[in-house]
Image (cartoon, rainbow, N blue to C red; front, side):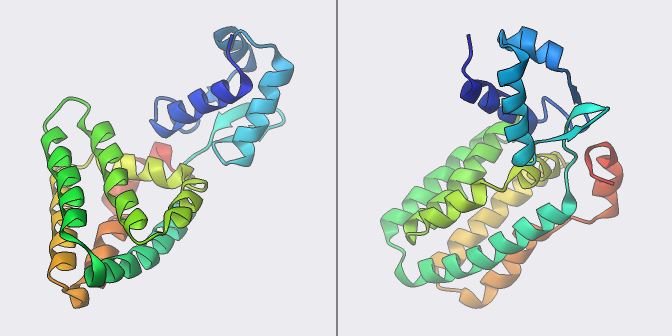
Length: 217
C-alpha cells in the first residue's frame, strides 16, 4: 500500500524523467489499480499535481500530463541566469581551493558518465549537483530550493536539450570554463558564458521541430 505522498512523488518522477510524456492521459482506474488506492484519495494526489503544474485536469478529457511551457522555461532560465552571474562573481572573490576541488570532482564524475548508457539522466543529476554546490558555497541554499519548487517545465526542457548530438560534452566544457573564470577572477567573461550556458537553443527551430509533440502550443 502506497501513501498519497509516495504516489505523488512517484508520479512526479515519472513526469520529470519523461517516462510519462507530455499529453499522456492518466486514467484514474489505471492509477487506482497500480497503487491499490481508492479514487477519492487518488484525486487528492492529482489535484496537488495540477496545482504544481505537473498535470492539467480537463472536465471531460481527464488528467493529462502537462506539455512543456516554454514561457515558463524562459522565465526560469532568466532567473537562474541573473542569479548565477552574481554567484559566479561572488565566488571569484572568495572561492577557496577546497571549493574549486569540490566543483572539479563533480565535473570529473560528470565527464565520466558521458559515454555510458542512459548518460543523460546521470549527467543531469551531476549538472544539478554542480550548480547547487555553487549556490551553497555563497550561502544561497534558500534560493536554490525556491527554484526547485517551480521547475517542472525547466527540468523536462533541460532533459530534451541534452539529447542533442554532442550536447553533453559542450555543457561539460562550459562548466570547465565557469570553473576557470572563477579561479582566475575573469569576471568580464562570466555574463556571456552564463547567458549562453543557460539560455541557448531555447527557441531554436531545430529544437522546436524535434520536440514539437512535447511542447505547449
